[in-house]
Image (cartoon, rainbow, N blue to C red):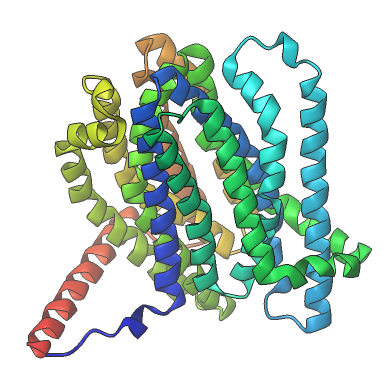
Length: 447
């Protein structure tokens, strides 16, 4: 019988998938601890804080992540040093702006009446600053294709946070304030580890140039627009729920959202793999292969998500109880999870529509697509809440948003790529059939 070699796992595709998987698993585990240790209102306040931090991170990551990979990767030593110095300069400048805005908001902290707003004003700037070094190091490692170190960096950050939260829960000290403080400290730890690995990149800040700073700025502003809009699309529901339905409802809603990692992990991995393959094909002027990759990956995932949605629907109540605890039994969380999982069947085609638009150099169209989805989402949130007066109004908005993005993206992409929804599904079915046949044939040969 053939032996399995661990060396087969030592490749960037597996390490990237493992990194996404670990990030998701640790994130779900952290949330489980918080759900079991805190009241619904307190969990909602924590999610509100994380939402604002995510928005700030989206500005920095959206502005500089892709730019770092594009301008740094594969360049000569002098050019690489100039790019890294300019990236550090811009990242520090963006962080300083957020700190100044946070300091200005601190003046009015006495007038704030909600716990989540006070907590955010006190800790947002410091938390954002603590993640600056390891964010830049992460981009550099990504450009260097050092996926093993990226995996380790994620283990340090998410693993230390999970460990601290578990200890605090055991000591019955897992309060909202402690969660925020120790989240800040674990960010500091991760940044220190990252700087130990790539301290030479920080020294390059003296080698920045005005020309390179300007070049990165003009490139980054376009990727920022789409990235920030996408983050707003994911975050706007949290703001509306928090202020219109309350933090307790936000806690209930975020529980099934966290469970959606069951589809997000393979989706992010396939998009990452498909994007690089499509880029190579497009740069070689092979639009036929670009279309094939679009249909293959989107079709395979769509078909796989159908039984996955059925399975998740059957065990939704168990999943909610395991993650959230007994106090969420009988809440809307399980039904929301079922509805979101069946909506997720549409995610692959929608996501690959946007990715393909970027690859064929139509980022402005993809930006418009995200804007359409954002507008529909906000409008549908208010309409849904006015009709249902509860969390199902938000689910109504999610369904409307996904359909809006899918329809707009399909219409726009059809102008440049010759494909159909039926073609995606038939190609996906054929590829899955071939994959299963190859797996069975390989199994027989080993036996």
